[in-house]
Image (cartoon, rainbow, N blue to C red; front, side, top):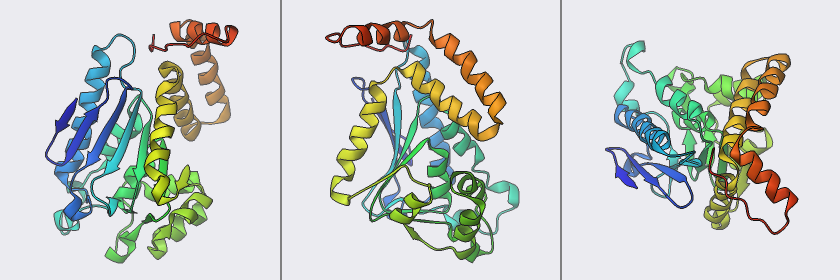
Length: 266
């Protein structure tokens, strides 16, 4: 499957179950405008429909990347929302679509990842970056703050002091620094980045998809509730997963060394 929307290209590999959404405005450093935000939602909706039509699970993982060689996403298109009313720029639906998509979403950060682009990456489940990438919240220099929860995301992943410093200074920090404070999952040398991302995503895609999706949900519950509620959720879902075909397949592979399991999401 290869589907070109106006500002996003959606591709799906039937063999691996890996989908790729490419932000496709390289001349604007993949800046987010209304069309791109809508296309991200539409692209994920199309993948969800494909998933719903499948027996079991079709989409095992989603990679979100930027076109070109300079940026994942350099932020919101300033020309679009400058002077607009507060209600005219609402990116939350897009980021909710990313964070709530059932399969894991991996932000493939290569180049600038700034402002709304960093907030988009933070809505993903995993963030992998090339070592030459730069991340930051430059909104302060426009007299505003990251409007889609950027400070809140970083405060939870790192700590409030780091989040406040990043947003207050507007500094573009290195990928290494972002990794040190916990914003990124992994940083790789530029010449190894493509292979490392592919390997990471393939590892996820090969795992039992129902368990992977449950683990994603468990992480989201952990971020939004206390330990007691999180443990209740895990116990409930654990019991459900015990009844799946994938659990039986995994148990058989564990018991038989020469058995290669096939996980179907049932």
